[in-house]
Image (tube, rainbow, N blue to C red):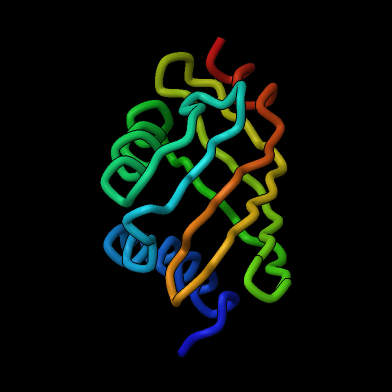
Length: 129
């Protein structure tokens, strides 16, 4: 059985490869994925299909070159904390942004059950105006 750290690391490794199937592979059907208030795709979405549609697809429609760069991954047992940076360019305005971000993951029974994002939503919003 893989550790929570290994499961979350596999998600980020898939992200680097631009492998959407790999990114969604370990997300549980009942996973609660929360994007921060003030972020373009704000809300809590349940399950891989809702997460894909309301987060990954939505961000691809709003931004060119939208990227998360992982700087540190911290092992806290069944919880994992990722620290990094978002970058991208608003398709509507052509303005780029860079924003610090923290992701908090909860893993149980070999699946991702929880995700919560904390980021500088102002930097993202500024690029969209």
